[in-house]
Image 1 (tube, rainbow, N blue to C red):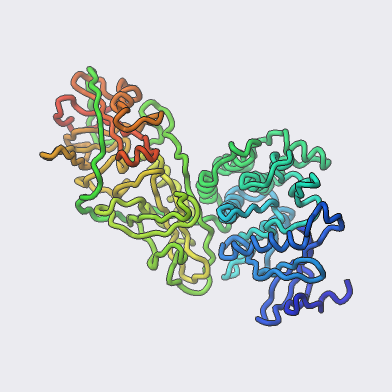
Image 2: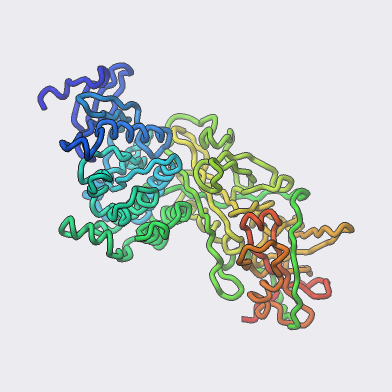
Length: 594
């Protein structure tokens, strides 16, 4: 309308130029006359319908905008500065980012996008959604036009990924009002349970994200049809075809998020790790940083952790020995029966991609992390997970001694934000190696806080699900180190020494030398019985005995961690082969029969 460019909203925000329309209202470039800065102001269109159907539309818009404002500190959410009312409608005052365009515009220009670029965008959007979900905030309208790509502070185009429009749309076809039975969200992106009349949930946001990622990597949405009715029916009933242009990990995320049953959709943590893996491969201009392997840590004496329990079962089979060295750590991701190693139930959480700006911050990873120095490979940590949810959301980190403090996790590698393509993939490869030997590892990629011209390297942290690692992992261990169940895996060899009080001390040794036991793999104790009620030796014999302990005088041992961790759910049993008479096995690794 005439004169709108000179209109002043709430006595403070002078409208200068219309930037665009959509999502329930027009967005304006405006000047904050008090602070003398540019802002983006969105006017919310109030539909002309009955109050019975919508209640207080202006109030609804204001409440939703206030929800979005709770996420103003998140690096992947467009910052809301103010919520005001003028002309009987809410106006949302947001940060203005020159050079910003939404994903929908990018797709019109150059769809389909490379798989790794889609994964990077997906990781950032997932992190933003998860932050809202932890606060009880549901987006309700995840789609390409609500994902913004902006330059970072150094001017690199499309580096920043920002989620916008947290449910503030009030158009009939874009907002669900229970009393009226209206269509919810944007057709083709709405979860089937919402189309069936269900409430918006975190799971429904994840479905919409899956549709968005599919559209980005394939160039067309999975349920897109010629008519609105056909599109809605497809979202309700049709199974999408597997995306052909997506990498394997990205394809797994997309199909996992598009499950019709919300209870069967891929968990956030698993999706986050797979997106990190997908972003670390390919040639996108701005991939998600991944750490790389580095130097090891000097050994010390381990004195703090409670010894593991273990039971045995004898087998009258002959041992077959081969010369040469022991198994390489992480040489396979399959167990002794040729079965894939169990994937962890709780996976990685990936923080947002950094965008350096001015200087090195006092807290290089953000104040909530409580770390004043950057992390380096080999350091061990304890984590204070917020809201009691391990491996989800923000965490407060504390550096601890790897040998004396029974650490919860370790920095397995780091990588600079501008590292080479090969370096960026080392975090994923290193984690895969360790997963081949460990039980239930949890990856957490910690990236620097935004706004630093010299940001520290991203840190790749590894934890265990429902247990502590208890000491160094992988190549950070040294021969002669005292080790515990949670540090061991297939291919390791150990010597054992029992003290007068019955305490068993186990040390890591070179398999080329005589040793008491060789680790052959992990198994799982099903059920809910206590550690004492489970014959762990029998479990190991059932899974590995015939294949590994074939000679008379040899037996299988079954290790478990602590009673406390067993009760917490870490019911993994570590299996090893040893001599029945307690003497050492000759140098050289045992060879499986099959």
